[in-house]
Length: 134
Length: 442
Image 1 (tube, one colour):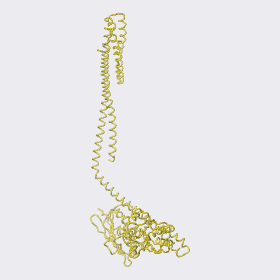
Image 2 (spheres, chains in turn purple, orange; image 1 turned 45 degrees about the vertical axis):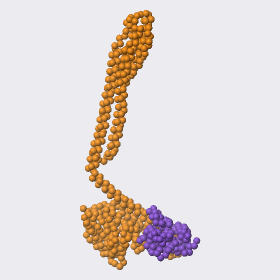
Image 3 (cartoon, one colour; image 1 turned 90 degrees about the vertical axis):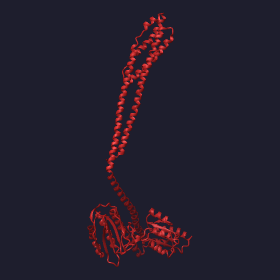
Image 4 (cartoon, chains in turn brown, blue; image 1 turned 180 degrees about the horizontal axis):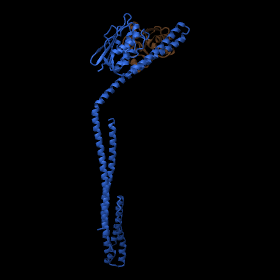
């Protein structure tokens, strides 16, 4: 798999979670670039300049939350083909429903512990980066 | 009246139904008794026929006159046998009706006639003339017919007595049914009357119910939201501790990183502690039913400012209070509202301005509209709804403003539990202005 030019965007307000994700991505492949946004508005600002191959986005964030950002990305002609994986601490039915209604490509619950995090990240990258390349 | 009229109606209906059932069976008995009367008369008429003209005595006399013609004897025997059957039937009815009367004489006469048939045959064989035969076999039978008459009327009387008794019983039952129905109608009228006089009370308690229903569904919604958000916010520090411990293991040889991870774990634990305290505070005040009393709002505001004097002094804030009316509210909860609003103003101060807080009040006939205005960093109009949601913070967890996002949601929850409204004044741009209404005391 050619992952050389791949970029993953992390939209996460929680620094610890973001560091753990970055580390897990690096463990999967050191060739993958990551870009970090701390909330929805920041993410949209960065997306107007750069185009990642995959977006991993938290739901509950200050200013613009993940649900609103997802809606904006998926209703933007230029951005909607980028796979977006929503990440949340809770399995709120309402959130899950909203995300899939708004064309989220997947909804995952953030695991407890770094080992589980690396497994989750590797599964996501394995599937969605391949899809993004095709 | 507290008794449910439906139960009364059910009991009445059951009573009336059982009475009707009883009446139905009694009706059948009356019918049976009437048939018995008819039976007595028809049977006694048949008996008289079997005995009298064309019957036993008639054929007996024909046999006396013409002993050669044996068919008269045969007919007389048949008549006798039928008569005995009929006597049996009548006596059975009489016994059933508790009437001691029997047809003893009649029975004896039938037997005598039957026996005398053989005597006729014997005398005729001896050559004795019919005239003489007649003399020796003559039977005094007037008693029998009299006895049948007496028997019939006395048995019919017995049946009639029974009928009368039954009819009296039925009349009583009908009176009971009528009484029950009248009771039902009366009770219904009384209840209706009661309902009419109580309708005001009812509609009052109805509206109280719907009020409490609204308040319940409001706190239910808040509770659901709150439980979801609380579990979310509590899970984050747990995840941090877990992630950092895992990474601590990996970075064990790098003292700088080890110290960073330990720091993260400590901060997560402190955050969990803060969250738990806030949760407790919210459950204490947020879902509490207000105990309303007449309050001087001025005194409450002054008390709150006095209690917060150290924090106000620390921030060097200038705080102004203007006159407020007498209102209906829970003193502790109202104090909590002002405390949270002032605390927010003290927290989100502008670096280049001396903090200034103004508490104002506008009143009309029914409501007092309070406002707490500051000259701090302000809140953008698009967040005017989100700021009131529990655990919602506009500033990230690691921002310079500590807290978990309980303050304003608690203010809103308390104001709404008093029947008031709470909002952010989006027109005000020199800082933050939060407004809320409370009912004025009548």
